[in-house]
Length: 292
Image (tube, rainbow, N blue to C red):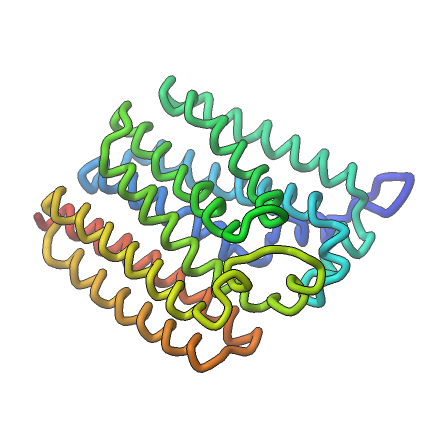
């Protein structure tokens, strides 16, 4: 696929723009949504809603990284890890990327219109948070919290789609996801500390500095406590607490590893472990609901 005038819009550049070959971010966005769908539906999430939210997560994550790269195109050229991204490297024109973003948002809106009025009313907040995150790193010392807001909002929407209300367990999952995102995205940000400090980009990894391991451990501990409280209040079975215990052990090991110091490769590996942790918690919630 080639568009005349300027750099070609190739399938390769488009795939790189939406991170098609790396779906870690999509899964980290998907799991809190699935937690909410399973818990709200008492372990029997409607197939149609599951399909809508799964496809919607992929589209919104793709839209999120697209607008992120559009905002960050000048900054990305100055960071070793991101300088080969399509817009930063010149493989894709900024206006083409903006067009992709608009198409993706249109697709997401089409999916949202299949849901109930309450969920439709919640959807604009998801778009606002997706656009806000790339800007937050320019002005906030803790932009990872904004990412958590964006990722956690999917759980609120999923709960509303099932129950046609915003129940307090949904708010608990929202809070737990914020803590989770602060934890894993701080680990992710450790890859770019030197470059970010040089170009003036803010991150929790810079903000916490040598105490980063304490901040990550504290955020993940808070997530674990919130999930445990949700489990107790919704009477989840013992298997849920087993999954939390295993997750807490992994969290503790990660905090200790950060304290000893990490290379970029090790930071990315720790970050990717959270996909498995999200799946572990999903399995715990699902079995905890069915066995209570």
